[in-house]
Amino acid sequence: MNNNKIPQLETKRLHLEPLGIKFLTKKYLSWMRDIDVIKYLESGGRDYTKEMLEKYLENIETNKIFSWAIILKSNKSHIGNIKIDPIDKKNLIGEYGIMIGDKSAWGNGYAKETSKEVLNFCFQNLLLNKVSLGVRINNREAIKLYQNLGFVEVENYSENFDIKNYKRMIVTNKKK
Image 1 (cartoon, rainbow, N blue to C red):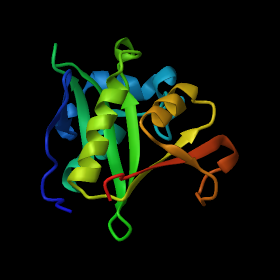
Image 2 (image 1 turned 90 degrees about the vertical axis):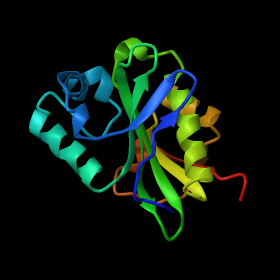
Image 3 (image 1 turned 180 degrees about the vertical axis):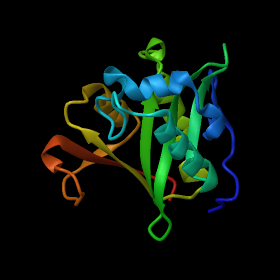
């Protein structure tokens, strides 16, 4: 697993660029304060500050975390982010997370398109065995997306949060 450089990735409609401090914008900050955008996330809120976002982006850039800005090729607009972090290098399992922050981009299949590309990268390039995620049980649209991507619910797992409100899902590298 090569952590030296986070590559740029491409899909038909999207450019995935390594996330970093250059994405510290009013637009991104507005997503982190938008209740509709963050209602299923573990971060954000009306009191989310520019300094908090700056610290987050600096950490991603400095520690070379596999996290990408999702950019529309058509107008070069940053519409969200996707990440695989943390990565358990011993067991080769990555943790998936995605946010489409730009509400005008919702419902266009960008999350699915981006996720397919990043999962392919995880299995082909990082040689991960599995990718896992946690999702709130009332986030029906996300669960439908994850199932469509091949994620299945895991019954027994331990986490730090209240498992009554979350599902744990996992997708396995089919080529291993």
